Image 1 (cartoon, rainbow, N blue to C red):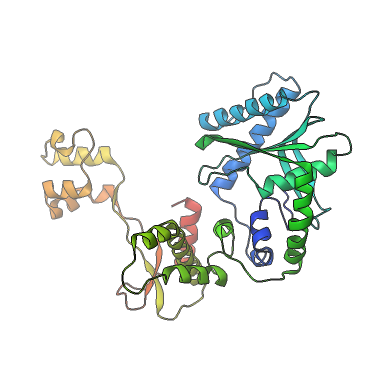
Image 2 (cartoon, rainbow, N blue to C red):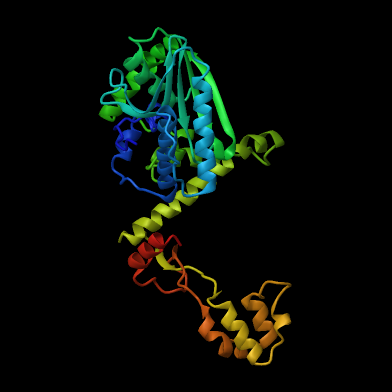
Length: 373
């Protein structure tokens, strides 16, 4: 499956269409790979294999690492086939590079599944994530894929209907939206072309909105900070009315998310050697863990404690409960070989905090990230 991305990619189009300057801002941040993107890439690869196997009438079983992914990718394959069967003399294109550079400089993307005939074009996009429901209505990513498909196939097929599909099986989000080739071409000329020109030159002001959610610059963007400040400062002369509270409720989650993102960015910069006046990095709190429950139980029983009293009802008591039973000092003597207290993660706190500065913070934090802690 293709892995290259255009500067003004279809997948990031909600950002550069609404905030053209975001493309330049994001280009200053490194690309990062997460377990979620790796999982999505693998799921897409399996989708591709299963569809190609069906198209080629192959019999070889496609290996899949887990049951949920296997079911999700098979359901996607079956959905594509059902749409395919609704066409008259259709053509199925799988993981196809779609060039929309006629409207966006060097613009291209990869369509998961395209089904085309003289009766219409169907653009189907597979989403393995389950964090955010994706809607097909006016979905700029799918519209740009449709633009690339129109440019690629429009001279071979006489279609006007275009249907965009989202298949997001892990949250049962399967939806479609119908539009026309004429409407898409108008949108491209009137909306996409001007925004792409601004995005390529970095013109305009940053504009905050729902599109900020996946922007790499979201935590330090001044436009988003100003938006959060404006929301947080919202108030009437005395007390908020019920109507005003109702207006504020939908924006509380974005405020909390932004605050957490800014804290994470500050910690990342501090670990990279940057200093924030009045702040320092210290070791955060951590919990003790029992490293060998069986050996600990054997030790306690040998010391005279009744085994059935060590459980509640089938699980071993927590460290606090065992300390109550044995007494802290005696428990510490017996359990020391089986108890571990890992270092806490680095935490950015006011300089007045009594904890010492975290030593080897950068190396330790890197190890924690690699270890998935």
